[in-house]
Image (tube, rainbow, N blue to C red; front, side, top):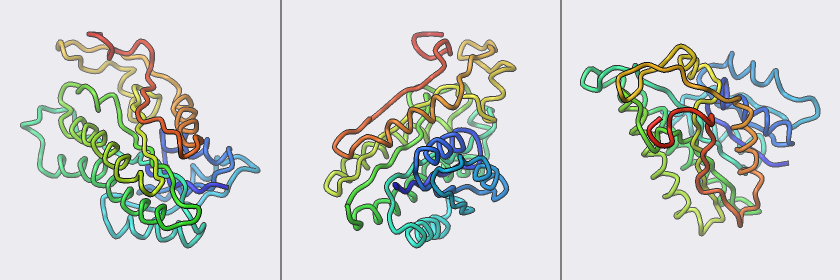
Amino acid sequence: MKIAVVTGAGSGIGRAVSLALQANDYSVVLAGRRADKLAETAAAATAGGGPMLAVSTDVSRPEAVRALFARTKEEFGRLDLLFNNAGANAPGIPMEDLTYEQWSDVVGANLTGAFLCAQEAIKIMKAQEPRGGRIINNGSLSAHAPRPNSAPYTVTKHGMTGLTKCISLDGRKYDIACGQIDIGNAVTEMTERMGKGVPQPNGTRMVEPRMNAQHVADAVLYMANLPLDANVQFMTVMATTMPFVGRG
């Protein structure tokens, strides 16, 4: 049985991916800030699937991340997969009106947290037998193109792409593979506003189509189950008719 850590596992994509992994015989460590939400994810586990362990974690805090991976190693003895999924957003206001705290909160959750988790995962993966493992980072279509008034989120997702490439390169000698999934408009709490209309680059507002988050979970499961001599470096999964390709 493989061992996975999923951050941001209390809702949305993190919950969908955690449940998909658990149903396919992964032991899953659920990481997130809210213990009650992690408990809801664990309660939805498939009978006969792998065990789940909930660990309340703020990934922007180094000591919390170290504790998360220490608990994982203590409980399961190894780590095969990290899904770096935890993330946050700032209010959709002009960047000149954002506070330092709003900026730093998003950078801490989205980018610093992914870096800290990758560090701890690599330490375990390179020292275990059999050696190696896989890290999958949750990018976004914002890793390619911004939405209006989205500087903190967009910058961190561009940064995630750089982090993915660095982990891929530096992890090779330890049999650690790293890939990134870029997601467009999965049905989660974070995208509820899409159904009410969101600002477009031309100044208009438009209702945007969304897709079932299960499609994302299936894609992550495919990436996770590849042998370590194969890797999906980047994958884009999106609602087919959302405004991204071309000009709308």
